[in-house]
Image (cartoon, rainbow over all chains, first blue to last red; front, side, top):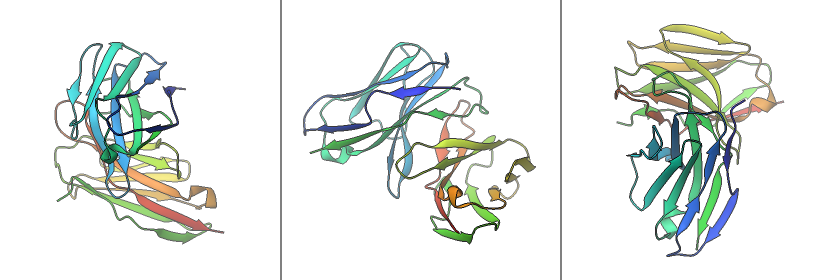
Length: 114
Length: 112
């Protein structure tokens, strides 16, 4: 079974802090994704990566950056956390770039910014 | 128009009934379609994928796809209380690379 592990289940940070969310997958997947999920808005894509050191903006990249130094690890960075970034953050991975490759999600990180 | 639309529900069905969940999408060139189940406080888990018109069955689950009508559905036969969850429809838009767009989900409640 694919395992996608997010380093923290719950996180509380203060406004202005730099926040790192870590994600590791153990199945040698090419693609990794960061989504956030908010009530009524569903899952929205923040950033994704198809290869090491490669990144692409999703639909809502503002206020975020990412890092993929190794194939198995994809980090989401909140440069200066704000209260509107309070959300559930979900990391996902998939095997190939082809359209029929499903996403496998981690357990999520619930981030609260106060 | 939203790219992927689902009725938010809740859809309430009695135990043993058939639950029918629906999803429409805007991009006529979309190639692949997925249904995810998400329990409260948990992450989405893949239930079904479907790529061609028609029905695809897996146990109590049947996915139906009609590309001409831009419509995909999920039927759950013999619904159980443990099926109570939010069901997310996800569509891979025709962008040349993998980009899944999710609906906001339909909440299903199965009463004993």
